[in-house]
Length: 334
Image (tube, rainbow, N blue to C red; front, side):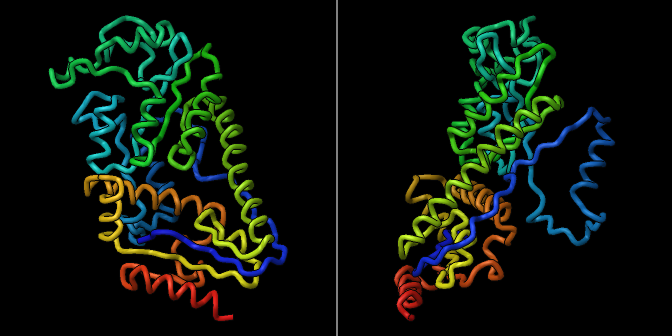
């Protein structure tokens, strides 16, 4: 039920720098396991102490569309990802390979026989050659002409709509240059909090961790420096960015978490961005998850909780004008 978090500072004594932590995406080394055993381990890892009865499944369980919604469209294609978003999935798992000329494409197999009927490996063809292949006709005329998408196309399409679990399909002898290339694509689109990287190759994961750690932490550190610099200059308003945590040692901090009903938020998004109701709901849920993960990762506090903030204001109940008067009144009260 979140909208924005507003942190306000009226005086500017010095404050301690915010701590930095490794950000949300969790990377682990995995070895091949039998499917049944792997599923069992996932259940164990997901439920500390096997306390299934105590879990809140509505909040804690997220749905992954494996290679998109393959019940509706060809795997690892834009139509499959569109169907996954429309079905309300939280994540899409997809696979990336690298073409002969270095383009990252979304495809599971090492060769193209199963999806396109041609006996070539991805790394032996250029992107133009791969893009010309039809991977949809085998599933019917509705998908005739569907092509293998690039990772860039998929990131642009899915940004803000759904989170991505990107699996690096590393092949023996392949260059690891694809890792910084992939991380840079994600960084440029500001999707670090929307993506998780997995691979069965430990070298790939080590490289991802090196690049991703520096990118995420540098963003948080830079924001912290800017927020503290603004606070030292005088009164300022900081919206989000863990501002309440960064300025937590400022005695005159006013920390307000502003929320609204889901109905109001959906209506606002539909009007502002011309979204359908379903797309608006999915966008809000996705954004809330990213904000929650980012805030809780760096502050170790619960996002949107009264225990984490001085005040929570429901703008749906109070209205815009009254909310403004309350915040203004707090500021002017001293």
